Image (cartoon, rainbow, N blue to C red; front, top):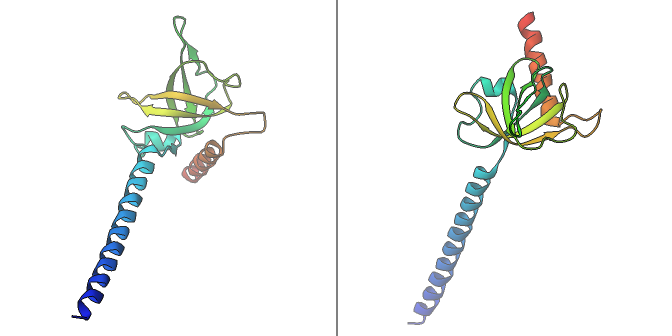
Length: 154
């Protein structure tokens, strides 16, 4: 009879440890799911046009605003333009007030979703800060596109 209380105590400890491990596992799983849904991935225009971007999720694109592509609506705040990584051009539509530094030939990052017709529908547009700044993601996308173009020419 002296052993029963000792084993009961061990079972309680083991049960408590198992419950704690399960609780931590559930918490980690929930955090992972929340982060997975809220992550904003970055894609270059070439990647988007190659079908690498998610269809129904928000993501970011970046590159240069193609010169001669900006078209502003006369009736509302809609602006259509193209973002390029020097290899491919992606049409973008944004409704709202653009940053003061937004202009053709300048680096931008836009956040939004891909529309059914292949146009990127931006919910936010971020422009570069000064003449020497380009968003890191946009700069990297342009460098990669230029490397691919150089390889194809050889």
